[in-house]
Length: 182
Image 1 (cartoon, rainbow, N blue to C red):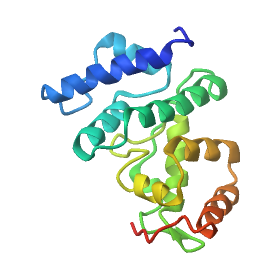
Image 2: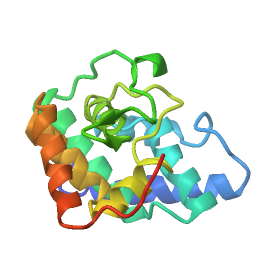
Image 3: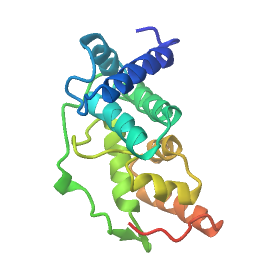
Image 4: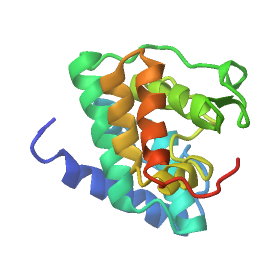
């Protein structure tokens, strides 16, 4: 893979998936050709993950392609530099995630989002879970945090949940958290 030009290839694969979506392919299976799947695998992105970004963009008008690219870039870097380009081979069950209303320090959704970010970085998301879903986006937008920024902060925090919680609480103290409920 040409590391210098991977964003251009990602754009081509995204656009091809978007075109197929508009032609009626409304599932990840069949949306991408073998060469596209090979490329996605090389950057640590699954067909499901890219499909989810395309599907939400078409149905809800967000996230934009640029957001999908930034999230894919963070995952790609983690995959290549931390995981040495080798998938973990694990998928976590939805039952292992904190509930949507589970709170920490009075902040609902945050425990779930921290776990989702770590799963996204490691490529261990269950197929029916999306990092950057319709719950994640308004939560982070209310804090003025972009999806890939949150992903990278969780990466930098390692296993230290408190570091992430305190960072988010700092955003709330700045007056950035609008009234938001899961």
